[in-house]
Length: 225
Image (cartoon, rainbow, N blue to C red; front, side, top):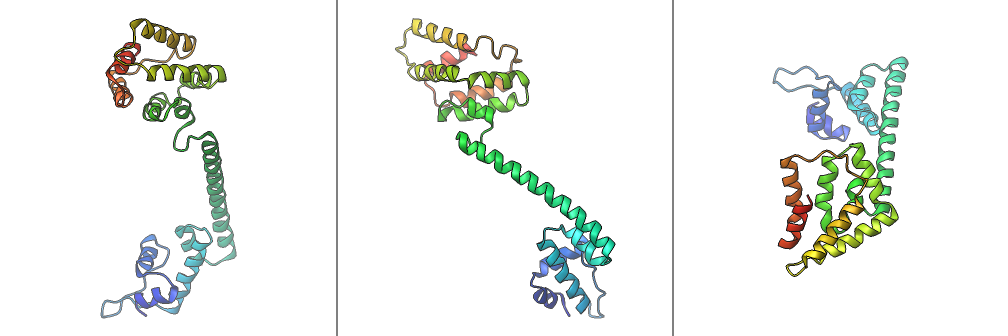
């Protein structure tokens, strides 16, 4: 039979049969004098078995190995390896579900825990993502985040954010100085051992942070940076 007939009887596409060949799962039969491959009933049985095995969760390579060597010992070795692979996939998916559940509960789907902690308002998200990435896996930064999410400090940070939102061209210098002092007081003892960002990193952070800010707000940020 021709490849199209084989594919139709096996319930797969011609492309799938060719993929089986490329992966070495289904041996390619000899060609006839006219150049077309001549598939047999055995090829159909092999294709059906491969389809059933891959449908059971085996990789194409494992399915091809089982189809090529039907001995009980070979079956057990391949199936044991496939079972370990499936167990690892289940563990990974379980971990991802747990992380997703925590993110949903914390209201920060798509954000790391650190980026979520730094996002007081929706507009903070881009800069929080970038900052969390720049200091990823850096222990002093993780300690800073832990400190920021403490109830009292988190409330104080929210209050400072609201005052910052009100900064405009009419804001007195004394009020800016007071706000600056409160910012320093809030961060006193935390984050002081963080290494400074490079000039490029600082520029990128300011780019995403300042995008929607007024000129007075940008001036305040730059003198605090």
